[in-house]
Image 1 (cartoon, rainbow, N blue to C red):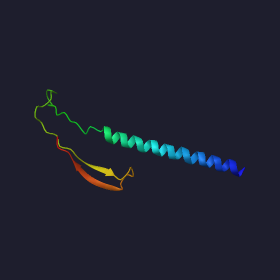
Image 2: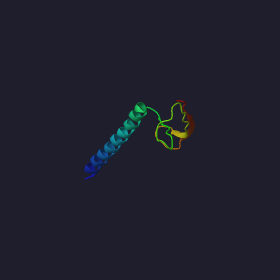
Image 3: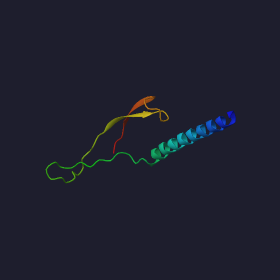
Image 4: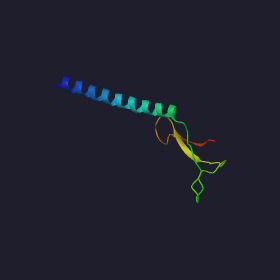
Length: 79
């Protein structure tokens, strides 16, 4: 009886570990495939793109191995 409980516990721990590894891999792949933000500025009246327009975005990015709020930094990108 005790042996069955131990085997089941080990299976559950392995399943949780596999799930955490998969979630971590998704985060890593997403970070490598991220092409960055894009923006198209359009005229309100005509709906056509405005040539030479510049879009500025400012946001906070949480870093620290997937633990949200562990450390925050202000990011800025110029395009």
